[in-house]
Length: 310
Image 1 (tube, rainbow, N blue to C red):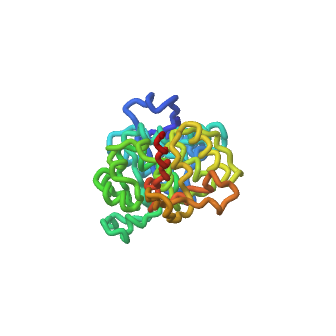
Image 2 (cartoon, helix red, strand yellow):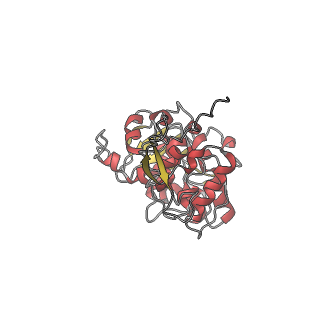
Image 3 (cartoon, helix red, strand yellow):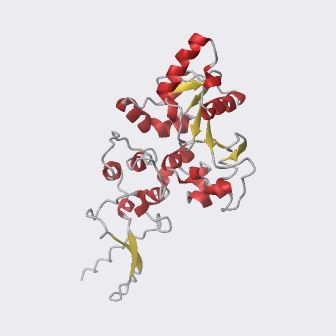
């Protein structure tokens, strides 16, 4: 696990999150066009060693500012996915993606940087800049919001906007994630697979495969990250979930239709799923097949009572 020192923005490697002295902070954000990557950070370190200057002064604004905020909070280390994962190494990239949920869960503080929200843009109004932020619609930020115990929201001009705990009710309205999950009162595993899938409804990622990989932590599964296979990654995710869970709601996706059984005294008015849109009638094509209005509320048709023995 690579971490940036908050005073100089220099990379240092630790074998695990538990090995970091004093703990660490972590950044949650939406990628921009010119993010500072791992190689550039290492190169900057070498150049500043020659010049005898502080690398932090030459970093991108995002890296510099998050280091400054963390340092003011008396934290010595910060993790940022753009420059703390060597994406040129497929093994390191896969390890980082598979470990990401754990990284956020063990962080002392998660700073959620909202680049499109001004410091005066917070309001309980769902039409206000805070609720409309792109951050709420990104695939990766879902697990980051859920996993981190302490989340502090940061405005575009680097001012604090409050915490996940303080805004749990509003965040639940925005994301459809139950407030109990955001308040850490209920573990994620207490919710059905279908309901957890629905939290990722219409969330976007830069690569199709990341819609699946960004959900691995929420379902406590690990997979080799393979790119170039498109929606096959989401099928692989569901296959891994099936190996670990007997929750049938994994298959409760697709369009709903109401049926009524008028032939028995047992009313069977239920919502049932239609799986005719895809070649696979078993697995969904994406999280968008799990509709938020119905997820976690699917009623499975009961077995009819056995006839009494004569």
